[in-house]
Every structure is written in structure tokens, then in C-alpha cells.
Image (cartoon, rainbow, N blue to C red; front, top):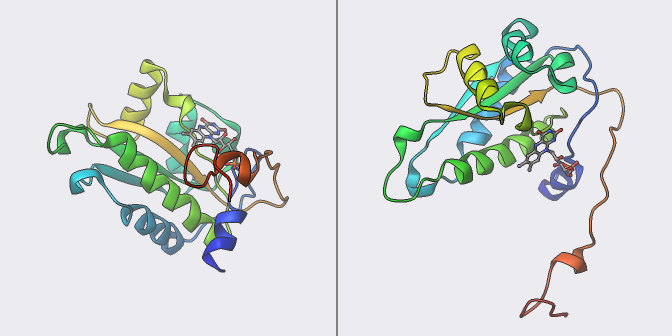
Amino acid sequence: MDFFEIVEKRYSHKERFLPDSVPLKDLELIAKAGLAAPTGNNSQCVRLIILPDRASLQPLCDVAPTEGLRTAPAAIAVLTDPSTQKGDHNFEVEDYSAATAQILLAVTELGYVSVWLDSPYFDDDKQKAAVKALGAPAGYHLRVVLPVGLSDDAGARRSKMTFNERVFYGKFGGHK
Ligand SMILES: Cc1cc2nc3c(=O)[nH]c(=O)nc-3n(C[C@H](O)[C@H](O)[C@H](O)COP(=O)(O)O)c2cc1C
């Protein structure tokens, strides 16, 4: 698929997934796309955990059962390691966001759907429980969980502002 078609096709799939499993080689390709993202100061603080089947997803579901996670056949958990910070600025949020964006495009390229799930882990207790459920060291941050799978419907699309409402020329508010 053309890159710009993939960009247009990506959407947040907030409905159920089909039970069909996702081959590990696809999940690894998707993970590689995430690791190829730029990282602040090249700190490479992002860690990915491939959850290749329902059994490996269940501990996260037990912490915070969301519609996506309850039906997804696989997922990728995106964590950051705060100890990798180089220099004064902490780039964990920027780094995980850049990696996640690339992961979502790779998911789309391979014909799967996903959704950025972070709010289930905002609560401190849920965050700690989820990090523990994933077997990650204390202190790591679970930033987002990305269910990966197929869908048998087109999925609901959200309305978007127009190009001209958000893009300006020369100065804020400027037109062509
Ligand atoms: C930083 C961020 C956090 C998000 N967190 C959630 C979430 O916790 N649960 C969820 O269902 N969707 C979440 N989303 C998906 C957004 O709701 C979705 O991207 C937005 O409504 C636009 O829809 P689209 O992705 O289909 O273009 C998140 C997206 C971003 C970028």
C-alpha cells in the first residue's frame, strides 16, 4: 500500500476484534517499525512487550478490562525506562509517542487494526499493577497498550477538522 494511503486508512478501532491469531513474524515487523522511530538524544528508552496470544494478554485484562483488550488476539505493550535519560530533558513521552505512531502505521500496512490505550493505566494503582503483570521492573512506565488483530467491520470513524482549519501558510491564520 502507498504510504499516504496507510496514513489515511489508520483509525482507532474501539470495537471488538476477530479471534484470528496474528503471526509472530507480523508482530515482530510491527515492533521493528516502533523501534525505528526517532528518540530524544538517542536515549532509546522505549521497551516493547509482544503479547502474542490471549494467555499472555490475560494478566493485563485482569488489571483493566477494556473492550479492545477483551477480544484482541494479540497486543504490544509500550513501556519506557526512565533510567535511560541522557541530558537534562526527559524524552520518555515524546519517544513512546513517536514509536506508537509508527507501530499504528505498521499495523495498518499489514491489514490489522489497533487503538492507542493509555487511559486504563493512568491511575497509579492500575499502573503499578499493570507493570507488575507484565513482569517489568518497578519504575518502568507502561505508556500504552496496542491491541492488534483483524476486524470484520469497517469500524467507526471520528470526524476530523478540515485541512484548512488546521494548516496555515506563512503565519498563523494565513492562507495560500
Ligand atoms: C495520546 C492518545 C491517547 C489515547 N488514549 C485512548 C484511550 O485510552 N482509549 C481509547 O479508546 N482511545 C484512545 N486514543 C485514541 C483516540 O481516541 C483517537 O485517536 C481519536 O479519537 C481520533 O480518532 P482516530 O484515531 O480514529 O483518528 C488515544 C489517542 C492518543 C493520541
